[in-house]
Length: 115
Length: 116
Image 1 (tube, rainbow over the protein chains, first blue to last red):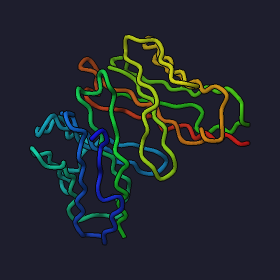
Image 2 (image 1 turned 90 degrees about the horizontal axis):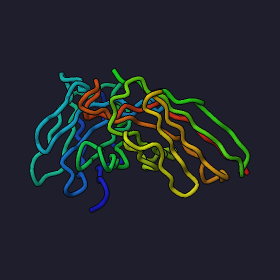
Image 3 (image 1 turned 90 degrees about the vertical axis):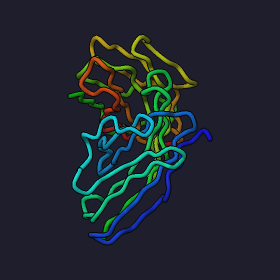
């Protein structure tokens, strides 16, 4: 399809529980990104993939966050032992070529609320 | 490290006005600059993409310009309408010669309100 599909749209977790978010990039897009949007429109880069390989994970809180993009499966972002500060909207984006010619297409996001 | 700044933070105008949103970036090593629109509680809608070799792009009432040498981009909205009310974000895509390769760096956004 021509859209980046993110599921679920909303996710509520108690503090300490696990959260798993999914992203299906546009078919043919080899580059996938995850961003976290917190208050006041601040977008924080988390991780990028080139096909199933991690390209840049400098934004990931490594102790609790992990992500995968496996062939023929949606990409996933998993948070172990969620904290209140993880409450945010998580966006996935994809591009055919690092956004050089076509930019990035974003999904509609997953709103994670940790209570 | 790339930093992107948007001015103003918020803008309220009457319907019909032409307006300019500003975006500045510190690292000129970019592939392109992309303008997005975000409605409350929604995702990002891409408005315009300007390649680093281009000076401007136009789509309907929207025109975006890029001046890499000065690290600036502007989004011009002509004849604004209440339906244009949203948050407008600019994002710079880092190229291999810069410090943000493969990433989008976002500005904080301009919250636009167009009242009838």
